[in-house]
Length: 155
Image (cartoon, rainbow, N blue to C red; front, side, top):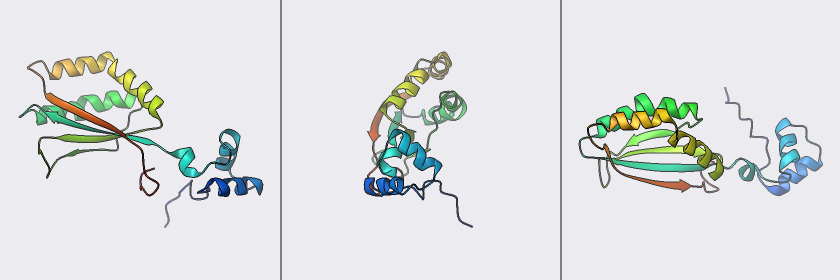
């Protein structure tokens, strides 16, 4: 049984999009594309950006950091429409004391809107303050905003 892919019929290049539209191919997605971004490829229309965040907890504080995400931060993120792709701890690398996660965003503006709303949420302030009552649990955070290559499995 094949998995339904609503994008499989979408054109892969601007020329194919224009040809499809010129031929009058009926498709609700094609009509949406025609209405607001004519003659663009699927990748150009549906491209996402991704944020890669790496946390280095204070030594010995990884369990508290993991609990804070698992039990408190994720429900707050859900309210703001922030849905992580995944979370990882480092098995082999420079440091085994790292938590890495990835977030998908529709655009930089989407990231700014949602992340700012989360950062300003009083519920998040309470969670952060409560989890750090006995001292900080995060030593350093790094983040990168990534854009997929044309050959990436994630678009």
